[in-house]
Length: 351
Ligand code: PLP
Image 1 (cartoon, rainbow, N blue to C red):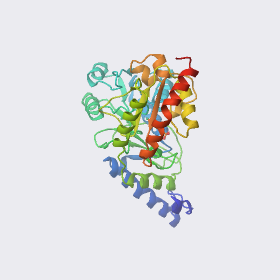
Image 2: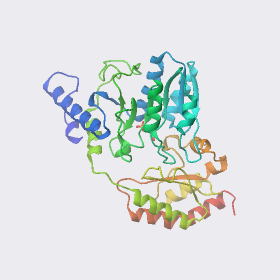
Image 3: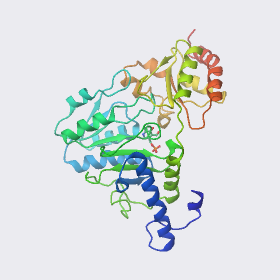
Image 4: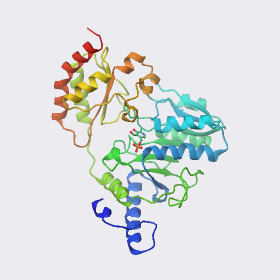
């Protein structure tokens, strides 16, 4: 990235500096495509996962001539909110339910499909509880019915072995794999019709306009090329340690199909916001839900969709691990947790 920042070329320019930047973009495109089993020509660079999700949902729906859109009830707001915007334009939006572990049941989805469905969106892995969805099965189901399928793979990238060859539309983001913020991609089957969201120079196949960020794109490819770090062992140690430290804590999400960098708990009677602040004071950064919705005092729509009541949803926290997390980090959390939980419970009025 540093090398590319020192170059002035615009990848769309024909002079030498432009061609140099174009080379960086195209090599990065090939590397990113290779990591997820896609064709390089299917990659459309965007400003991140949010733009990729918006482009897919709005672009596919507006091109379809159909009027229904199905999105899972546990989607990120990057899907839920464009769906609501489309509802205002006249589309019928239906939420696909999940079970108590946060999984879409393919048979239930199959019952909801009909010939008026413009697009189905189910995320590959959930950003709050870490549940991984049966995406190949859902993609096959939609393909057999001739319905375009989009998956938000922002959280799955780098943690699940992704093969997107048979999936028409997939959203990716660089910063979830240690790359720069503000770069992402929509992997879009060239045969799938779509309306652009952003009009202009038509840089990305006429589907997405705007000068490409060659340095950011190079950073995205470099992050994906870094050796994978398997955090599953650390995650299991974290779950075990948290339960030992706070025996009435409840683990949320699917115990088998879950992200290797995510652990999500409810602490009965303990306000999640207070616990977050107390842990933060101890140098431990956690989240009460999606970081993108933090600050909005609403219980998590993900936990509510999984059948949790509001008090459980408000007493829940997500712990995420990164490529640089260590056993000492986990030990620090487990050491700080009992006192923080006791104090947060007192603040919340519990015994
Ligand atoms: N989708 C999911 C599942 C996410 O977790 C996020 C970000 O946290 C996004 C989409 C948005 O991606 P970006 O931050 O690149 O816009």
